[in-house]
Length: 253
Image (cartoon, rainbow, N blue to C red; front, side):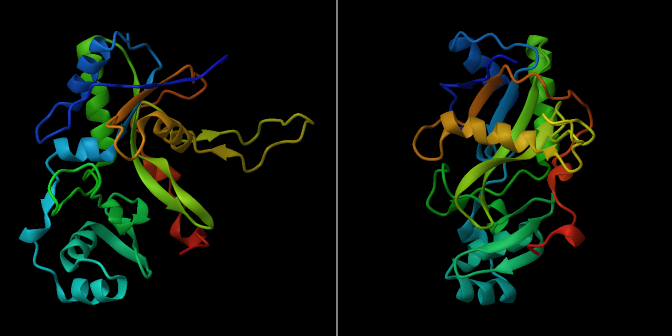
């Protein structure tokens, strides 16, 4: 592995319900004169995927529950938004002054259940996470393979904050065709010591690398190609649940 490239996929339209994300990516790469290659890794934002899957919610259609109204007072949030956050949550982990940390139904630990208001038209519209981000990644991967014959890996990403650190990074919430963790336990370091705990969350690292060209503001680039990172393991039936620390071992819960 001599070098790793991160290539923005430009010219993608704003996604809408029933869009074929795999086809949109293939069409955009052709216009950009980019030839997809074996072992390319496609990173796609959850908002781009969620809108295509029809998960956009208008808050004016939501009736907040009593619990949502109570939490809204604590967090100074719109009660309708809090209701959506609760509907997407499997468990409330922590309620803070400005955010609600939850475990989503798909297993992701995130602020506000990952419900997003950025990059979606309509002042009262919000976008929850895909219902099954790993399945979303599998669908995109299969469609790219059908259209091009090229076997790529796919990561669906979302922006997350981190305990004890200021600022957000992109992490993987869905994967297909790539093991999300590179387990290096048992390998030797430079001095011959055996690594005992070394597990690298490569799916998260790749998602963060992609964000360098995708951005979170007005860039309008919801997908990127990572090329040249060839040390990962190709795998079927993978899931980002491998990245989630078991509750009994999580010191922050």
